[in-house]
Length: 224
Image 1 (cartoon, rainbow, N blue to C red):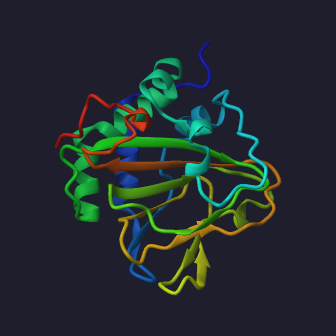
Image 2: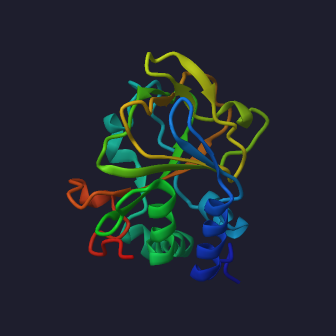
């Protein structure tokens, strides 16, 4: 018996496209889209059962770049080991997914590359207010954490003066998409994490992305 079961790539594609089509757009403090039921349940289970230990970082400096060597990117090597990672990456690489992301976000995706990171934050982790770099054509976070305090673990949102204005709900298997720009300030204010704050970050990145070891398919650009 194989556990967890892995959905067909086509099923993941259809499920994700439906989630994007049902998304809710908001324009304050910057344009973003809120999604629900992003992945099939079996995909979520496959990610949550990955035998990857959360990095014990202690108190960090508020950036992820400071511990790049301990981050979990969905690379070709990881895809060969874990079928759920391979199926999800194959789905997000498909032209029909690329087209709906291009149409929804109004971005040029052809020739870009898929970048996926499995994030597991434990107590002490935080992120200073920041804006994603323009080399990311879009940024998407899918929340996969559970527990009594999980409702407090969403992304913090700030205005152009870095004043806190709100927080994503962080509902299980919900997500947020935005296109990096001058006003897209976000982070994760320091607060207790009892358990593990698990999430997926997904991007299409420009062809000149330097860290090729972070890409899910470095030899396969996105095609429409």
